[in-house]
Image (cartoon, rainbow, N blue to C red; front, side, top):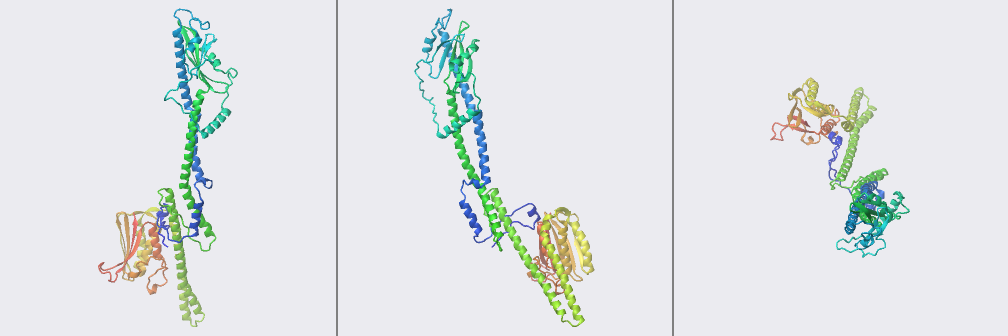
Length: 577
């Protein structure tokens, strides 16, 4: 099993900025959780939106804009207004043309009476016109008396013109939708009660005669008793500057309604097609968003539910979706990284607990042996020696428990405490001034070499101070009278190096990679039990939480000869500026 580090829970910047470093998945055999996720994925269909609120929201929001658009088009109905205007303009032109034909046939200078056919016979004049079968023409006297009309007259019928054929085929779906639309319109649309008893084309034409006597053309729109739209146009027939009659044209009932119906059917047909396409695309979109999220949630829920009933919980396997170049891929990678980091932390805690138990057993065994020996000791000097051993082991246990407590709280405290800017050299000066007196009291020379200008860094001043206190006191403990300790610092571009050197016995080569491990201690015989072996491990944890590095090395007479005896030990701390 391999778990690459993904989230460094000991790093202040990593935890606070939620920086997830993705890595390879751990290697583990197929588990029941994987099988359950695959089974649920196999049972899931593309259209099972009833199980996914997110999929339903996606489909609803995509359809809402489409429905609003089509409803607006049908409500505003701009095509009907355009068709009505064009039809009315066409009727005006035809009415004025018929009136010009009548005026051209009137005798010049003679009086005219349309009712008596004096000057022109209106019936014959209408019969000689080649009118379309869809139009009704009325000829009125100025007093609105009907003189002639085309009602009942035989017509040749509409001439078929190439290029003007209108294909008005419809489909079952659009007819059904249009029927529902007209049913709703008949319920909510206002009813036209004006002229309901005489709502005929002749009646509507007669209503415009009086307004036409002023010499202007009039246009009106009405409805018959079935609600079909009728356009009526009236224009005067003038003779010698006087209005002698009125020509009125009415369109076929429902002619515009049929055109509007066809246009509406086309809109509804496109709406149905767009509706099906939108639903299909929404389902595909929902499957690419909701299904992966469902897999991630299912994996986490299965791990939670199954592990809740197990004494030995199994690992939670998060599906690997990091190949997706979107937020879901990032979420999958983040969850996998978090799970990996949690398992790494759990294993670290388990190992720490095992190390603690092992370290505590040693002084406890010594105490048990000393107590057992005191029961059989006869001389006072033997009892004094055993009491000294017991006191030493008790102090050792107390020191060990205190250090273990500090180490266990360090992770949470590093995350909770707020970073601040401070002068690193000022903090080092205060530490060296105090610890230098202790070293000098022991007969150890204490030398400092710091830059003149301050070095400002961001971090936890108290925690970093703990690091340098550990390093300096550790160096002091290994030095005897006549030895020396040197603390110096140098700034290098974006980093600062702090070095603690001593002229003690140095570090065994095999221990250079172990000194930062928990509970590891390489001490002289006389100092056995005086240290818990956690100081350097805690220092490494604090430095790495600040984005820095720490290492140990031996001071040798020449780097070329690595087999020469060391002149002392050197600890180097590098911190970002």
